[in-house]
Structures are given as structure tokens and as C-alpha cells.
Length: 159
Image 1 (tube, rainbow, N blue to C red):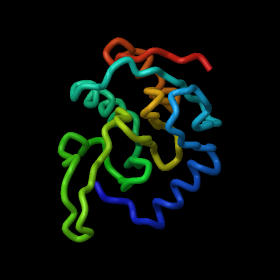
Image 2 (tube, rainbow, N blue to C red; image 1 turned 120 degrees about the vertical axis):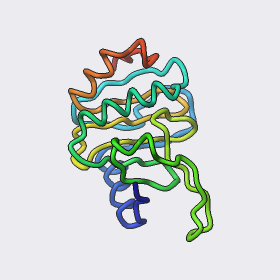
Image 3 (cartoon, rainbow, N blue to C red; image 1 turned 120 degrees about the horizontal axis):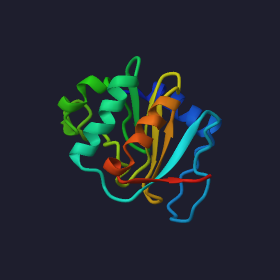
């Protein structure tokens, strides 16, 4: 795992904001907060995900990701990581060099927008904290979510 440098982070956020029309908002009213032109599915989150649920989602990424993933946390550090190393990641630590706390996001959007995706945007998980919903990107990842709706505590939102 590594923290994404500012320049690389800006390129990623520019893509998400300009190409995918990401519009953050603190409302609980339904709106198009991101527009994904590729196949995706939206799910409502009925409950906060447990550690077991987080590991299940990570197992999907372990199986499907061809390379490292990006983990973006709106207004915070972004990361490049391998799903294989997910279980060993220190999710919160103090960065002595920058003199600040660093928080690696969970897959559940617990208070901020969290985005996990591969470099080609073939698979991904985009989470909205106030609407308590996720958009799942990629046919095979969608199949994994559809096959595990009960375990994940999710309901499909028809668009």
C-alpha cells in the first residue's frame, strides 16, 4: 500500500469530477451524484458492514482485480493497494513525516465518499455516505454482489 501523491491524486479526482460528473452533496435526497457511462448497478445499504462483510467484498476484488486498486476518500488521502494485502493494512496510523493521521477507508462509505477502482475503471465500488448506497462497476463484480445480497445486506435500486 502507498499513499497517492498530490499530482496523481489530482488526475484521478479530475477524471471522477469531469468525466463521471461527481457532485458531492450533504443531502439525503436522491440525486445523480456520479454518472458512470459503463455498466454498473446501484444498491441501497441496509446496515453497516461488519468485518466479515468487508472481507467478503475484498475477496471479490482479490479474485477480479488484475492489478492494484485505487482507494479514494473524498477530502483525504488516496491510496494504491493490492486486495491481497487488504487484511494486513493498518487502517489508521500516524504519519511522522507529514505529522498527521492517515486513514485507509473501509469499503462501506461511513461518513465520506469512498471510491475503489482499478486503473482502467473495469471494476469498482463507489460509495455515498448520506444516501447509504453504492454503485458497483463491472459485470463480474455486479454478479458477485447480486449473488451475495443477503450476506451484504443490500437492495438493488432501480435507476
